[in-house]
Amino acid sequence: MAEIELIMPKMGESVAEATITKWLKSEGDSIEAEEPVLEIATDKVDSEIPSPNDGVIKKILFQEDEVVQVGQAIAIIEVEGESSQSETTTNSDTPKEEVTIEEKVDSINSAIAEQSEVVSKFSSEGRFYSPLVKSIATKENLSQEEIDSIKGTGANQRVTKNDLLAYLENRSNGNVPKVATTKSNKVETKTTKQAIILDNGDEIIQMDRMRKMISEHMTMSKQTSAHVTSFVEADVTNMVMWRNKVKNEFQSREGEKITFTPLIMEAVAKAIKEMPMINVSVDGDNIIVRKHINLGMATALPSGNLIVPVIRDADQKNLIGLTKNVNDLANRARNNKLSPDEIQGGTFTVTNVGTFGNVMGTPIINQPQVAIMAVGAIRKKPAVIETPFGDTIGVRHMMFLSLSYDHRVVDGSLGGSFVQRVAKILEDFDINRDF
Image (tube, rainbow, N blue to C red; front, top):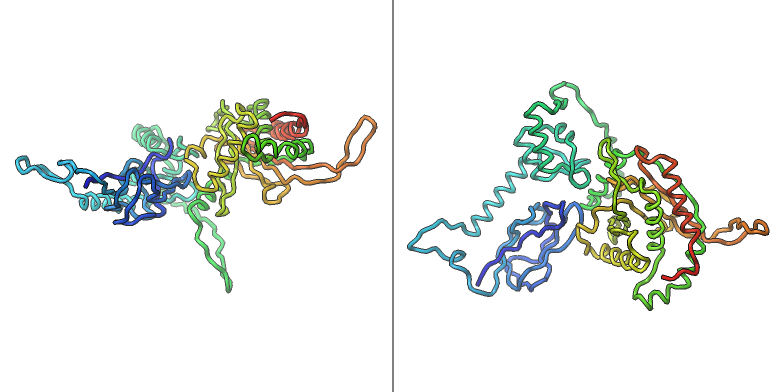
């Protein structure tokens, strides 16, 4: 019998580690090739790791809730075949040092224990720090205030190893001003926290990992951007009538259901091409104008949490392409089948609060973007219709659009004009158009 290592795979360009959330197999269990062995979670997405071969789980090297670096072995699988001499035997004529599986496990566990001890000094509350960054910071005797002051270049402004090393080099050269700490300046910073009094029958539920991430991300966004929200009501009667007219033919011909989402995404992409300064990010005093229009699509999960898969280059896709992309991402999001790269790189986000029967919302910006648009429920309402022969009252399909934007770089003129332009595109929908 031969032995192979089950390796923690690369989960995306910016993902360096993952947390084991659940082992689906135990030591001694038989597995088939491509059969899921365990579930993992990154700061981007949850996924499963399949077995590369048929075999038997001989040794599990990491337990649930432990963090594993990309490229590390997480289990040993025994497979059919002959073991190589270097793996199973020691040449008696040429003695050489051999490390057993048990010794490897002990070494790994020792490293985990050591890392857990040194990284516990730093709090991830409000900002994520990888175990590697925490470990380096601890060895260099950085304070919490110093590591919090470092500008991160990673995803969502995360501090990377290179950011930390650059900071340490500049500090050693005297180019980094000292950060005042509560210990050195003898000034205490007190955080007021309201005590919560429990009543009879109250239940305490621990946040799951994704809910914690959402909480941290939303809080960070409100602390980062100056949020402003503008509202517009759009008459989308033509769009509703067109969709009702073609939906059966569309599904028969394309094998896909057409919802209002791709129609709205199409309108948003058109408006962004006309007003590219809504498709930007802020980096200090610099404004980064995005070349690609990558639309995030906020999707509710069965757990009640929210995830935002990304439609890349949405302006380059026709309506059929958008529909297929929207349906595919939504289905795989609900079934936990998205890859980390599919929820990265968004430049503008659309969230459909109408799904929950809401007529409008004030969404929080998905950093590092500067705007997010919420679309409300479409409802029939009496409305004034202007005609060449005078005004009349009619029943129309109406929908509210609300745009939250970062007032640091998007003024009311641009924000208000953009949401009005999206509404105008939807109102002018061509009821005689083809797919």
